[in-house]
Length: 79
Image (cartoon, rainbow, N blue to C red; front, side):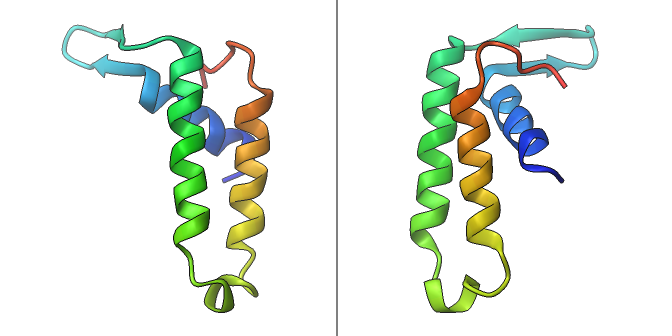
């Protein structure tokens, strides 16, 4: 999954709840609050890794790119 797509997915998951039975979304918090939560999550992921283990697989770079995409978002989060 591309970093922009992962960023959108995280923002949607923190901001919306889809009720498939009634076919609507429930908005839980502001976009800025969702953005803040996503950034906390990504920072914690990055900090929790064993740097030696993940250095060669590109995971850290991927999540750094996801973080950049979240920071750039300005209200457009629908996939």
